[in-house]
Image (tube, rainbow, N blue to C red; front, side, top):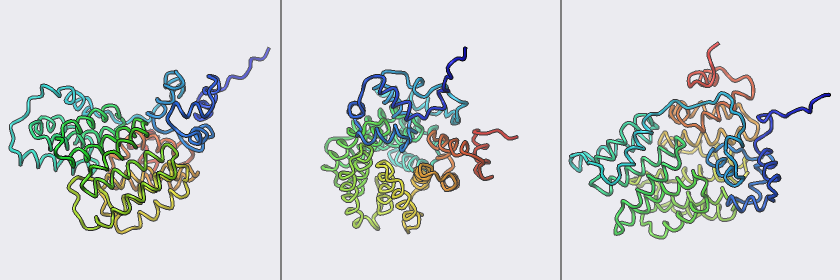
Length: 384
């Protein structure tokens, strides 16, 4: 007697597996969406494969609602495109654990200020391994100065989000807020930027939206307020709230006129180009992939594009690569990743999301020599 054919778990698209498991648990798309804090449209696009599930934090949240282990949802793993081990994350975790009894180093305020400025520069050039090595000592150095310690926590949260440690990033971001003084609202609102980024990385988009909008009411710096509007817009887009997304982006855009030639003491990167990049990412979150690519291609031709920090440009190119791939264009997706690697190599070589994206492009068929070489260099493929 012939045995029934058993489907390979990995051959079933992830969205379809989600749909099957949801149906098996007797949940409608609306109920499932409500429990996730998403829109029904978002769930439908995920299940039909229109939107990709490429963030582990979102997959984990779906698994929690479905009451199963994330690995069961993902299925047996193929040899993974693992990022190189960054031992510095463990050291940063240990440094964060010593919050109450950390012995601070004796340095002058000016020396500590210069070290924080150097850490910001290291982050903005995406030198993540070096930054991880420096952060534990910097947390000690700045422990006695609230403004510098809050900035250090914010840098710590930012790099941990990059490296897909959102829960640890949330801890650092929360410390950034609690460290600031209530009588210095700019420090608190600036630290809230890190909080909203961590919440978004965790998939808590409604909380991120609320936190960002609450903080805009006390922000006395246009760049900080504008950045909070952008974070709120991206959170709204992730919930499928189209109208609110565009309103918030427009609010941010109105603030750029006063920022055209101003310095950026709070390291927000805010300006007309940043707003346009946010419009591109928001359009992608809303499922408007063609519009996302249009905004991307317009932004990278703007005068403001070269003036953005390398980290910001490379991170956006990774987002653009995902948009291109979602339209069935692996060639432009690969070119975007190569451009990101030229601008800030660690954005592609250290970030799990970029490595996963590169692996997906490689798996779609023969890759150009430059892309195949990059995959080999970072350990996704082997030399013949």
